[in-house]
Length: 142
Image 1 (tube, helix red, strand yellow):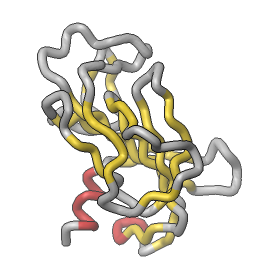
Image 2 (cartoon, rainbow, N blue to C red):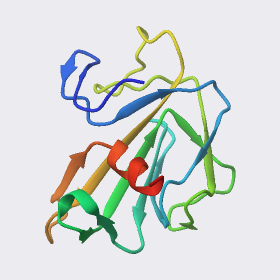
Image 3 (cartoon, rainbow, N blue to C red):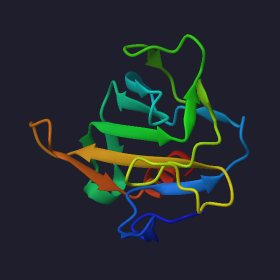
């Protein structure tokens, strides 16, 4: 796994985690939410919570959460605006290896699922802040 905020793709400050996964591996939604975008050119699916999540490490504040899955081909029939539940199949890992500059990361020797998590801290559209996705994984598995 490539960790959050580590050096990756020539940058210091990787804004997600990369988990090695074979092409064709199922990708499931980590949250209840709505499909906000499906970008087949950049191989991404974005899900935003329908109800705010409680974050134990943020004084138990409830926050709107956005998760971006990258290096994924969307499940057939999945469309923007669809509602998904945690655990619903949303796509499959593909062979694209997205990097920060929106080109295939040809230096990556393995396929991987990239997951970025953003929490909304204000009322404006630009108030999303990147956080370590492992906080969400750990919370769900306590």
